[in-house]
Image (cartoon, rainbow, N blue to C red; front, top):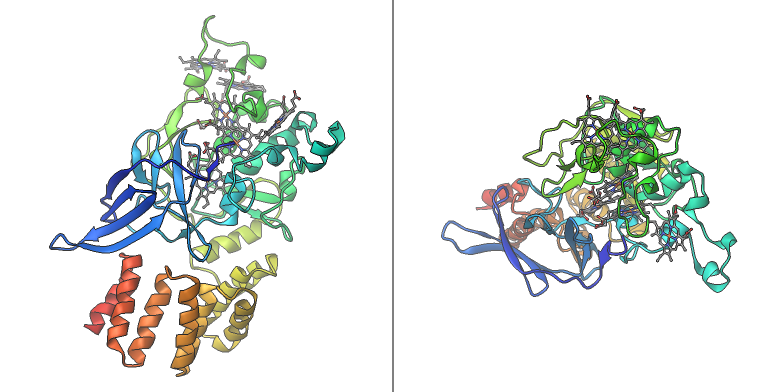
Length: 454
Ligand code: HEC
Ligand code: HEC
Ligand code: HEC
Ligand code: HEC
Ligand code: HEC
Ligand code: HEC
C-alpha cells in the first residue's frame, strides 16, 4: 500500500487499438495519445496528455493520471496490466467510455492516496496522526490497531477495502455532516458511512471485493466477530499466511496445505476483466463462470443495508437521480443531505430547467456560480437560459468562462456552436462542433448538429 501512488512513474512505451470504440492509443515519452483514422486512413481527432502520476502498485495494474493546466486530475483511459500489458482502464472496455474526461475525485483519493493531494498511503491512515507521537513517543498518543476491539480493527482496513459495487447503484453514503476526509482509525466505520447492497443478493465478484466477499463467508459470520483481515494478513507487508488452522482442524488428509488455493480461488473480476483477484468468500466448493465482457449495467431494483444503519431511503433517492428517473422532490432531498454542496445544488438547478421551471432554477444556478465559479453545469445551464431569453452576448460570456475553466467539456463546445449559429457565424459554429467531436468522438449530439449545419 506504500506504493499505492507513484509520483514519478516509470511508464512502458506501447501502442494499443481499442476495437469497441475504434480508437488508437500510443504511450511514449511520458505522454498518452489517442487518435482515429478517417476513410482515407488519415489521422483525425487526436488528443494528447502528459502522464503525471500512477495509481496502483503494478502488482495487478497501474492506472495513470494527468494533471490539467487548470489543476484537474484526469484518469487516463488505458492502463498497464501485469497479466496483459496495455489495455483499457477498469470501466473503459465499452464503445462509449469516458476516454480523457473522467475526473479522479476526492473519493478515489481517499482510498488510493494518503491525502487529497496525491501521495502514497502512509502510517497515519491506520495509526492516526503521528505528529505528537514522533515528538514524544508513547502508547497513549498513537493508535495501535491490535489494541482496538476486533470490529474496529476490521474497520481500519474496511475504510478502503469495503466497496459493495464499483458502479450500478450507490454502494455507500456518508452520514450528514461528514466530508470525504477525515475518517479517523479507531472510529466506528458505520458512524462515517452506511453501505448498501442489491436486495436480490445476486452473487457478484469485483476488483475491490475483499471486504464485501469475506463478510459473506460463514467463517466470518459464525466465528463470533473474531475474524479480521489481520487473521491472515500481515498489515505491513500485506502478505497472507495460512491461518485456517487457527479455527479448523482440517477435514482433509494430513499434509493438505494449499487451503486458499481450493477455497479462495483467484478469479477474473466482472468490473475489470484484465485482472484476477482472490475471492474472499470462503465456501466448500467454489463454482463460478469467468466473465467475458465488463459489466457495468445500472441496477434499478431495491437496495438493502449491508453494513451500518440509516440512509437507505436516500440511497434509493440517489439511485433514481443517477439513472435519470429523479423527481424534483428527489433532487431536493439529496440537497438536504449535503446542504453546502455546489454539485447537489447545480443538479437541482439543471433538473428544474428540464422540468420547465427556469424562474426557480436561475437563482440556484447563480448561487452555484458564486460558490464555485468553475462549475460547468451551472455555467452551461445559465448560458442556455440567457440564450432562450435572447441575450446571446451574455450566453457567449458564460460559455467563454466555462471553456477557460475546462476546455475538455464537450457540452460547452456544443453550446458554443449553437450560440455561434444563432449569431450567424457558421464558420465558428462548425469549428466548435468539430472540437466537441475531437474530445468525444461518440457524441451523437455534436455530429447531428454538424450534419445539420452542412
Ligand atoms: C487508505 C486506504 C487503505 C487502508 C486503510 C488499507 N488499505 Fe490495503 N490497499 C489499499 C490499496 C489502494 C491497495 C492496492 C494497492 C495496489 O495498487 O496494489 C491495497 C492493497 C492491499 C493488499 C494487497 C497487496 C498486494 O501486494 O497486492 C492487501 C493484502 C491489503 N491491502 C490489506 C490491508 C489490510 C489488512 C488493511 C488493514 C490493516 C489495509 N489493507 C488497509 C488501500 C488501503
Ligand atoms: C472504497 C475505496 C476505493 C475507492 C473509492 C476507489 N478505489 Fe480503486 N481500488 C481500491 C482498492 C483497495 C483496490 C485494490 C483492490 C485489491 O487489490 O483487491 C483498488 C483498485 C483499483 C484499480 C486497479 C489497479 C490495482 O491496483 O489493481 C484502479 C485502476 C483503481 N482502483 C482506480 C480507482 C479510481 C480512478 C477511483 C475513483 C473513481 C477508485 N479507484 C475508487 C479502493 C478504492
Ligand atoms: C494498512 C494499515 C497500516 C499501515 C499503513 C501501517 N500500519 Fe503499523 N500496524 C497496523 C496494524 C493492524 C498493527 C497491529 C498488528 C497486529 O495486529 O499484530 C500495526 C502495528 C504496528 C506497530 C506495533 C507492532 C507491534 O508488535 O505491536 C508498529 C510499531 C507499527 N505498526 C508501525 C508502523 C509504521 C511506522 C508505519 C508506517 C511506515 C505503519 N505502521 C503503517 C497497520 C498498519
Ligand atoms: C476465525 C476462525 C476461522 C478461520 C480463520 C477460518 N474459518 Fe472457516 N469457518 C469458520 C467457522 C466458524 C465456520 C462455520 C462453522 C463450520 O462449518 O465449522 C467456517 C466454515 C468454513 C467452511 C464451510 C463453508 C460453507 O459455506 O459451508 C469452509 C470450507 C471453511 N470454513 C474453510 C476455511 C479455510 C480454507 C480457511 C483458511 C483460508 C478458513 N476456513 C479460515 C471459522 C474460521
Ligand atoms: C482467511 C484468510 C484471509 C482473510 C481473513 C483475509 N484475506 Fe486477503 N488474502 C488471503 C489470501 C490467501 C490471499 C492471496 C494471497 C496471494 O496470492 O499471495 C489474499 C489476498 C488479498 C489481497 C490481494 C489482492 C487479491 O485479491 O488477490 C487483498 C487486497 C486482500 N487480500 C485484502 C484483504 C482484506 C482487506 C481483508 C479483510 C477484509 C482480507 N484480505 C482478509 C487470505 C485472507
Ligand atoms: C484440493 C482442494 C482442497 C484443498 C487443498 C483443501 N480443501 Fe477443504 N474442501 C475441499 C472440498 C472439495 C470440500 C467439500 C467437500 C464436500 O462438500 O464433501 C472441502 C471442504 C472443507 C471444509 C468443510 C468441511 C465440512 O465438513 O463442513 C473445511 C472446513 C475445509 N475444507 C477446510 C480446509 C482447510 C483448512 C484446508 C487446508 C488445510 C483445505 N480445506 C484444503 C477442497 C479442498
